[in-house]
Image (tube, rainbow, N blue to C red):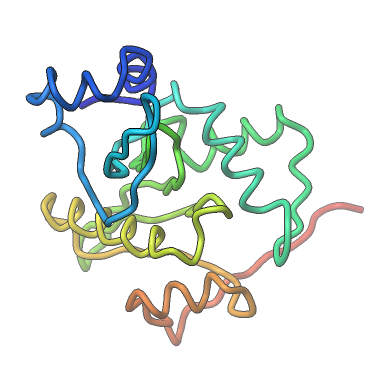
Length: 196
């Protein structure tokens, strides 16, 4: 599998060369959609997307994407403390021993899903702790396409389903409903503050 660092090296060598002389490498990428981009003096090529499993080498890129996705409306999260943000990402990714997916588009990480595998009496589930798409890529079908790739991967691995939580007054709730997620009627989330 070619990761972002390899993609950057290939881009330096010229995408035209990659497409013509490195044809055998193309199979490692997924061509999706009909968007085009320009490289090498105006030549137009199809936009490339790659579905990957994330590891700790992506920590900084995940942090930037996560911060951009949640800093604005409707979330307004203050992730200005980069150390705290990176520790949070390590937590929800189970220190990258969990099941963490990414979508790379034209060499840039544009979507992430951080979570873990949970074995339950009804079957094994993928528990998503955080799911986000770069705000510049939202409302273009990238999130649904990415979720479909995740579903295909976990089906292939014999999982029973996906579990996640979100706020019902946020756009993410409508996104998950559109992607056939259902409310668990008897499930509630509880919290108790222990601060003075």
